[in-house]
Length: 578
Image 1 (spheres, one colour):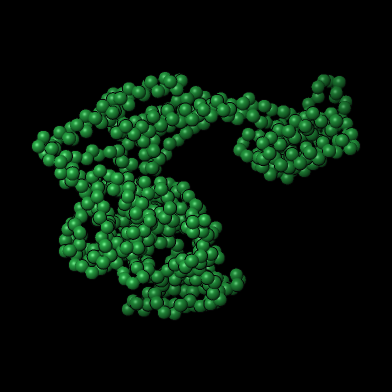
Image 2 (cartoon, rainbow, N blue to C red):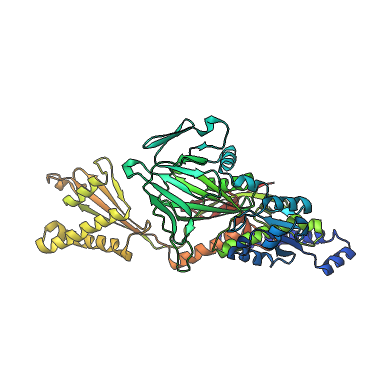
């Protein structure tokens, strides 16, 4: 089936779906009578979104980027509560709003009054983006860990030393040289000691004597430092702490930022536990690296967002021992320098707010297709169904011919490589890794150089094939991908005899070297692949003219698209759920 035929086959589905959307929009507007519609058009009614936070946060660059994009919505207006109003005036005198974004933070001189924000929410009853009461829980690491355990989210093994508790069993500590015992739970060094208050960032990591002892003391970034080493090996004797196993993470932490349960942005940074030096770019920003979350980590992000009732929420992941552990939940936080995140965050929040409040305020807003909607598509029967997955069997595009060369080799260096790579008389070896192919190339270069000096008959006989072997392995100047491979097969009596007259000639063991290369996409093949990709995205319409959004939704909603690569014609099997 050609690409043109595919486009023509689905053009009718697209037209039918857009007609359906147009009729639905007209029906929604028709719910208002003529006078109401005129009134709404003239009034210019907007949803007022109030930002209630300390000035350091509400006036920060990331917040300004998001609010600027929210103001681009026709029916949204943002209002930032001045810090003086929040701290000095009663809640009855705070600005009015329909939707409230309020979150706790600590300024240098004052702390955000969560109790006043709760009183305001109870007084005005706005639509709340981040639950305010739950922000008290987020300030206590004991409660955070309790909620995470309830949601069955992986945590490092831990125990709480609660010196504030009247129960003596909650503050039992026995300290030895290389371990501590907390309430009967033993932690061998290295282990982590965290204050129970989430506002206290003085976290210590204690090292065993075999690693030199001492401790690494983490704190909020000050200039270019985030931790310092201390020779002190004894744990702190005042205050309440959580003790937990130190997780080996290869020197990185993963920061995850959610916007609703179905969106998560992730970045990695250098762990402050390494040397305490903060890596910064030319603009003075901490260096972050993009991270793709696994399906399990996306599920963790969803659980954290829902469990703590924080639409915009940041938390820390530790990737260790093949698993992902949550070690901290920060509440409202956002990415520091990502235009894509700002666009996504504003779009999701704006649609979420209008979807909730537009009907109540009688705003004639047409609900657009949102990423957290079920992917609904029309079928040839005219019935609307939910697309659950797409299975594709796709043939490769135009490519260069595959080529193969065989040669018999007896040189000891080939036998050494054969044995080194696990070859036996019963087991052949395939060499695909760059290091293995480099060794074959080194042998070919050696034999060609040796043949020029010694004039060995065997090398002279195979010089043409050795040259070809060398030239193919030197292509591109480096080894990458799977476009070249070498196979070595053991022959106990050498190559099969050409005729019966060779029966009396004694034959020695040898190896057959098989070199394969070629089969790469041509420029035409690349164009074909890109064209198929575009058409594949357009096969299943989304809504409101957003072609191809269905495929994106399947990825974002953790529904896998299985693509089977085979040398066959292109078929695709859409699976629907009514």
